[in-house]
Image (cartoon, rainbow, N blue to C red; front, side, top):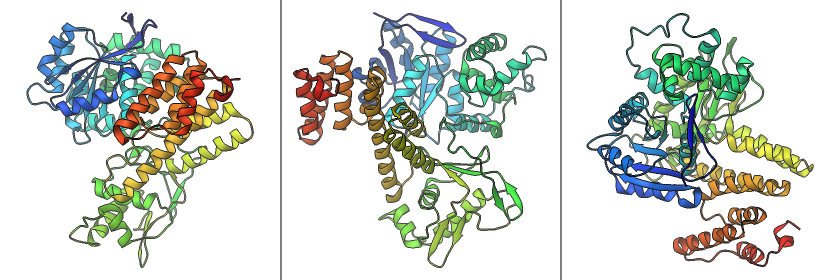
Length: 517
C-alpha cells in the first residue's frame, strides 16, 4: 500500500499507512550506488525503487515506478545532476531531489539548489546523516547546512538586478519579511517562532503566504531567494548544522584593551571556527589538521616532532618544520580578532613547540564533556528523564563524522575516540529510555544507530529488548539473525554471550531477564 500525500506550506505531509521510503539512486558509478544500497536498507524502512547511471535516465525511471526521494550525484559524464534536476522541475510535479556533493563542488552545489534540489549531503558525511537526510526530504523538509549554503550562494550569487532589492514594496508584511530573513539564516520553524514570539502554526501559515506571493516552490527556494536578493548576508547566518549552542555563557575574549567577539570551534563534524557569527576560512585540510592537533590539546605544548607525526604520519613534508611555521602564520592571521595586539593570537610558540590558548575559547568537545557529566549525575540522582534530555543534548552536538576529511594519525585517532563516545551516549540514552518505558522511540533511534554501527552487540541487545517490549518478538529475533550473519560474514565470529542470552530470553519470553517483570 502506498502512502497518501498532501502539500501544505511547502511541506509534504506523510500519511501513516506505510513507513517505507522509496528511493531512486542516480550515480554513474556502480561502486557508489552499491555503497548507497548498503546504507539505505529495507530493515531501516527504505526501498531502492530504481537505479540510474545517468541523469538522462531519470524521467523513464520515475515513469516506471513510484519514488519518494531521488538521491542524485551532481557529477555524471553525460547529463549531470544539475541538468537532470532542472528537467524534473520543468516537467511538473516530481519527487524531491537530494544532491550528493563534495567540499570542492561549491559551484555545482549552488547550481543544484537553484535547479530545484531541496537539500544536499556531502559525500564524506556519515551514513547516519544520509539516512536522516533522506527521511527528512521524504517528509517534505529541506536538508541544508546553513553555513555551507551561505558560502556557496554568496560566492555564486545569481545576478538579478531587477529584483536585487528584494520583493516589491508592500508585497510582504513586516512579519513575513522577518520570517523570510529567518528562513534564509537557516532557522527552523521552532527557532523562528521563538525569535519572533509567535506560534509555529503562525510561522507555517506565514511561510505558505510567502511561497505563494513570491512564486516559490519550497523552503530551499526561499533560502536561495533570500540570498540572491540581499535579504540575508553571510554574516547574518545564525545557525549551522550543530543545532544547539555549544555553551550557555557568552564569554568575551579580550586582546589587550580591545573587546573581541568570542572564538568558537566545532570538531564534532567537519572542523569549523567562528569569530562571533562569522565563519572563518581555515584553509587547506593539512592546515586544518594542524589546527585540530593544537585545539584538541589546548594549553599543552605540542612539539614540532609530535605535530609532524600527527599530521603527516609516515609521509613527512619535504620542507620539514618550515611547513609548520607557514601554516601557523596563516592560522594566526585567520584566527586573530580585529584590533588584536598580539601577533601570536591564540597560537603561542615556545622553545620546543606550539600551544593553543584555550581560555575563553568555546569548543563543542568541551561542552560534550560537560553535558555527559550532567547526564551521569542526573542518572545517579534517579532523575532518568533529565538524564535522557542531557544525552539528547550531547548527541545533538554531533553533526556528521568528527573531524570529517582531516588527514593524519592524530585526526584519525580523535575521530575514533569521538565516534566511540557518540555510540556510548546512544547506548546510555537507550538504557535510560527502556527504564522509562519509552519503547517506540528507543527502537526507532537504535535502528538508525545500528544502521551505521552494524557490529555493536550491546546496541543490538537493547534493540531486541525494545522490540520485545512492544510485542514485536519476531522482529527482535530478526535483529539477532541480522547481526549474527554480519559478524560471521565480516569477522568469522559468533555473537557474544550477552547477545546470545538476550536471544534465549526472547525465545522463552523471560520478562524478568529482559527487565520488564
